[in-house]
Length: 116
Image (cartoon, rainbow, N blue to C red; front, side, top):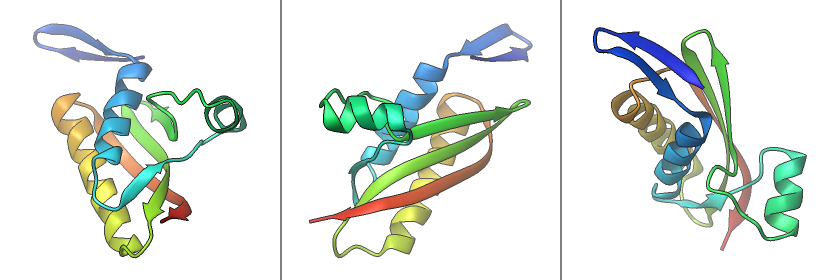
């Protein structure tokens, strides 16, 4: 959970909200076929057992008041991978800064598979 102090008071943002915001932003991008698991535990529960979570494929690391976001995605076959990755990075950074008021240090996108 991240807490920011503003002139209005303290604002707390949970990790679940950040993950769901990033997940919705990434899955709405053109060329993204889906999210892949970012850990072994997510792989077991999400891909083998079929219980996909709304934050699957999103790993958030906090460094002070800055965020580092790691994303694992599947790209649609035939799309320009560089353009998709660039679009995902820009949209995620914009969404976190605009909707949650958080500072983003870096967004890392890992393309794990290509789907038809």
